[in-house]
Each structure stands twice: as structure tokens, then as C-alpha cells.
Length: 438
Image 1 (tube, rainbow, N blue to C red):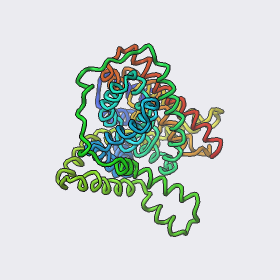
Image 2 (cartoon, rainbow, N blue to C red; image 1 turned 135 degrees about the vertical axis):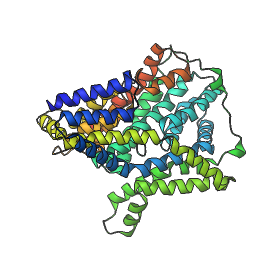
Image 3 (cartoon, rainbow, N blue to C red; image 1 turned 45 degrees about the vertical axis):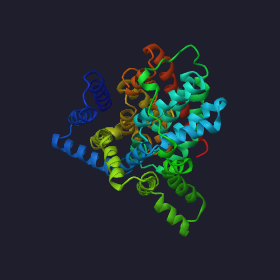
Image 4 (cartoon, helix red, strand yellow; image 1 turned 90 degrees about the vertical axis):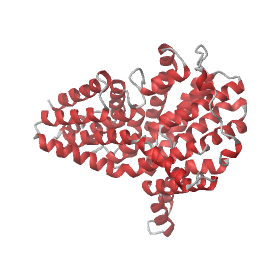
């Protein structure tokens, strides 16, 4: 009976979001209340569980995600994203254009939310394709594969960061493992797959082909653009690497542990960006802070959705459902990593949103860690991979791609959906391979 209630709750979540177009946060709250009451909890206790879950989840996340949004906005508004794109394209040349846009998507995608990175970089992709005479999808798909991987696999993006908090995974290790898994996933789903797409011709709308291009004087330098965009990765990654090498009491280890703390790393990165991409470029503090303020408005709903998922997770725990599911799966011969990936995939197909799919799957799969000994960091990446699978008509990213590239639904399924699914499958394979070494 408990498992049936959870399944019914997930189906209701799907209907509320996909069929009735209800806001995902409200849908999470309604489903959490109904699941809790159906499991025999007192209504006021369910409310307490939801509030506790929201508080615990956002308490660990709000600094990271808020500061991450600020950094992404500063990178975009300053022209650093454009500088990175143009410089890499110039350096790699027409023959290796795909690798240039892959690197661009990866570097710019780390500090930026997916939608922001898409809107900023796609017009530049159109410009590059027009200048080189190459097919648009040949240039665009590798960029989008990079953006998608950073969105699904890597902190400080909302879903992987939120899942890491739920599983108490080390964010530094998650980031390092994620980068290792990301490389082959991007290569296969991006440059290799795009070379097979020869019978689909994108004809983007004219308003997308000629974006405003900043002048040389308006953009920051290449080195400072790349350094600022990647600073959170540098700080968090350095702390994790030093943690493996140096003894516990070493002074350098203590220092890197402090600056490599995800929240502090994001704060340091934003402060550096305020200077390097703002004040040093002649902007006033008021102008820079206006940009920062605008960035926070864009993540309010993302934070609420993550909080709602945390509330559902807490209800599943307090009602005993998580323990029940854990007991059911204890005897399973299927790897917890594969099970978590499958759960995320099913929810992704039903709900559409990768963030909602990942966080919902994390709440259900939490008991799988238990006594299995599986790495919490790899569980984060398995769920992140599953949350990208089989994107179709209920996913906002599907329509964003379709409209910008002006494709039919059939051609969008043949290109975008296959690319996203390739990313998801490669992610699972990477997780299983890495699991044999960790």
C-alpha cells in the first residue's frame, strides 16, 4: 500500500504540472499533503514535515544557488561569455569549430543556469555557423550537449546541488567525478552525434540570426573571462584534490577546505567578478549591483521548486515510506545506481522538468544508499543523468530548441531528444565505470 500511494502521488504530480499546468511548487505542496495524509499522518504533522523539509533543503542551498545566479549574470552582461566564444572559435578555426563550441558551452555553462546559457550562446552559434558556412545543427548540438551536461551533472546547478544536499554527498567530489563523466558524454552526444544529423536542416527565424555583438572595447579579456567563469570550479576542485594528497593537519589543507567550501567559493567568485567584470571595466557599483539584483529574480521559482521537492522528501521519510521502499529494494540484484537512474528517467518522461525529476527521484531513492555502500556522489550523478533522458513535448527545453532552430516536432525529436538521451545513457555508463574504481 505505501508504494501504491507514492506511485499515485507521482502520477498526480505529473497531471498537475503537465496536464493542468499548475505551478510546480504548488503541485509539490499538494502532493506532499495528500501523500502524508494517505500514509496515516496527522495533517498538521504533514505541514510540519513539509516546512522542515523546505527549510533543511534551502538552508544548505540558498547561498550557493543565489550567488551562482549572480555570477552567471555578471558573466553574461559583461560580455565575458561572448569573449570566450569568439576567442575559442578564432583559436580552433573552422576545421575544429565543434571543439571550440563544446569548450565554450562547458565553460559558460558552469556558472549559468541552462536557460540563461542557451539564450546567451545560441545567437552566437548562429553567427558562427553563418560565418563559417557550416550546418547550424553541426555547430549548435555540441554546444547544447555541453550546456545540458553541466546543467544535469555539475554543481552549482540547482538539481545536482540539491540532490547532493539530500544525499549528504561531498559537492567537491561530485564536481570532480561529474567532470570525468561529462567529458565522454559531451563528446559522444555533441561532436560525434551531430555529424550523423545530415538530413535535418535548421532555418532559424531572422530575429535570432543577428544578435547585438559587443565591440572589442566592451568585452573583458579572454584570460580574465575564463578565469572568472571557472573560479568556483577551481576553488572547489582544488580543495577536493588537496584533500586526497595532504595529511589532515596540514595548514594548506585547512586553508583550501575553507575557500573550497561551496558557499564560500561562490561568494569569493562573485566578489572577484564584481571587480574583474564590473568595476575594472569602468562600471559603477550601482550598475553592477543592478545586474546582480536582476539575477536573483530569475531563480526565485527555482528555489521554491527545490524547496517543494525537499518537503516531499521529508514527508516520505516521516511517514515511513522511505524505509518501506528501502526494505523492498534491499533484496534487489539491480545496482542502486541503475535503480536511481531508472526512477529519475521515468519521472523525467512524465513530468518534463529535469530539475523536478532529479529532486523527486532523489527523495524516492534516498533509502537505496543505506547499507549498499554505494557512493553518494555517484548516486547524485546517476540521478542527474536519468533526469536528462528522453526530453519530449512536456519539457520547456524541447520547445526552446524547436523554436530557436525553427524545426518541426518530428525533427526536434530526431535531434534534441536523441542528443539528450545520449547524454543520459552516457552518464549512466560513466557512473557504472567509475563505480568500479571508487
